[in-house]
Length: 78
Image (cartoon, rainbow, N blue to C red; front, side, top):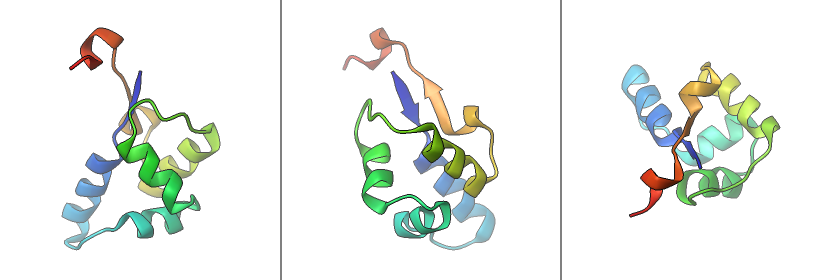
């Protein structure tokens, strides 16, 4: 399963900029609907488009591996 590390990237941005960063702000800045971004953050295994991944990488100025992590199914369990 793929896990999106959006919360971690938001936390890093907040630390760097010394301010609160909202999901709405990220959604607007990346050009992604807020509901879609919220689902990416909160739903395990949410399927999204490569366009969304591209936009988030551009927004956070990061590489794809900074945004997405592969978690083998046996580790997901729980």
